[in-house]
Image 1: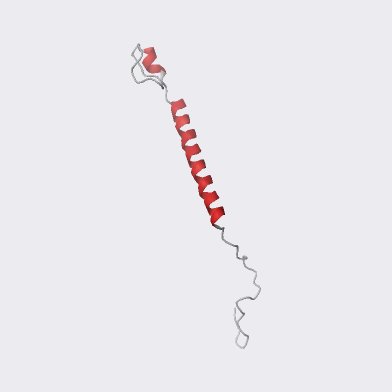
Image 2: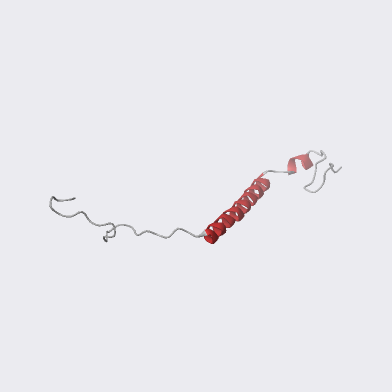
Length: 77
């Protein structure tokens, strides 16, 4: 609150506010982007692994139907 007759505080006056922080340089930004990309790929791989583990593949074997394995193109008989 400003009272009449008091000068306005200068730009560099100390305040009880948060201090300014330097922004990351180009190397730090590149490292952050690289880390984000690696974590995104790993997260997608883990999520797809969890979905693959949850989905049951035993139904085709129980019914005697031919099924494809993870590394085969043609159904095994």
